[in-house]
Length: 187
Image 1: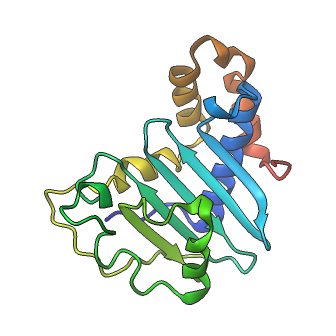
Image 2: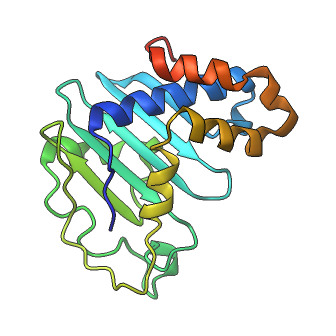
């Protein structure tokens, strides 16, 4: 299982920027791949990447700088749906601090649709549960975490491919400016 290479603060910034850029290109929720809600519930910010094909990453940020990331690769053999007896892969959430594990109860988190999870309690390092997923099973963490750890140029490349002609509404210069300035006004 991979963990983010970005710090929790940088990951939050990138997800805010991606959501802001995505919202500029389209106001149609069903077309957007990135969302960021600063105050989802009780001071918890929620970011989501959803490729529309059944795969997603959800990141929850607490006011005390703790972060929970849960990802789901619907084609992974680590998926609860791919297992002979439906269930979350043993150990994925083991060791998660109670303050973060309580966040899994939010219906929007879809806690059972999970192939990897990690968290940060110190704002600097990442932890995972005790799950042992065999090396021949791809949990989706590598490619899904790459999707939420883009810089402005990576996002521009993705957006050109994803949106095609509609990308002109955004443009590369505007993406660079958004990623540089931040995105504190996202709803």
